[in-house]
Amino acid sequence: MSLIESNAPRAIGRTFVDNPALMLRAVGVTKTFTLHGQGGVQIDALDGVSLDVERGECVVLVGPSGAGKSTLLRCLYGNYLASAGTIALRDDARADHGDTRHIAITGAQAHDVLYLRRSVVGYVSQFLRVIPRVTTLTLVAEPLVSRGVAETEARARAAALLARLNVPERLWSLAPATFSGGEQQRVNIARGLIAEHPVLLLDEPTASLDAENRDVVADLVIEARERGAAIVGIFHDEDTRAKVATRRLELRPPLRHTAAIH
Ligand code: ADP
Ligand code: MG
Image (cartoon, rainbow, N blue to C red):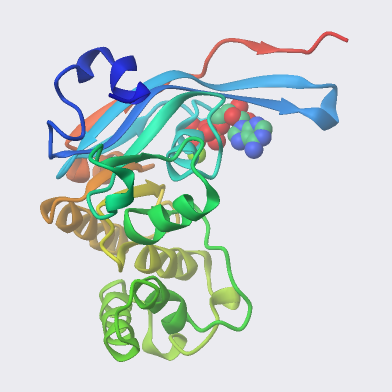
């Protein structure tokens, strides 16, 4: 039995092996930032957050600005290394992890992180990271191509998703650098959802969208949930939260913001 199960009180008898629906388990995730450029001030962003997410669930993170919602998603995606705690994702595919059926993303080797992002976990960040000169259609199709889907099929699926998200066809052959905030966000959503990852992390995907496109995104999230994805998301409007959430997790900003003593 690994550390992850033995640390989690409610996990007894319900490991990734025992519970085939379990997709993501975070146990005691803590994140402290040290601002080296500013006298070593420490900011506690997360203080011992635990979370299990099963197939078909959409856990909506709620809490005031600064509560650590985005930080938690970045830890779950392996962008930030948690200061303490463990995060594991289901992985049935790779035999070289033995019969534990999960990989810990905390402390994972770079190649395991890349593997998890290709095959297991998708992430829609708050803002699109634009790659110069790469066209919208190529950008959206890329996660499928990297999983071995033929280029023509990948591009057809990218086109269908962009159309559904009301991204005008005249923009598909352009790089999104010059697009409006809302257009970039929809390209970002298409890129994040196209590969139908079993686990999805969504950081305010509807923040810069109008009501009609918010509804399209809510429908896409519900469809992902219904095909069995395990989702953790932040949604800035209550309307969307109410549509997509199966459960809510409230985060509160930890109280200790301590100055370092020299
Ligand atoms: P939320 O998404 O709930 O608004 P965040 O996760 O963005 O909150 O931020 C939580 C806290 O962590 C805030 O106090 C924020 O300033 C701090 N924080 C987030 N990212 C960093 C970082 N890269 N470096 C230093 N502090 C950070
Ligand atoms: Mg945030």
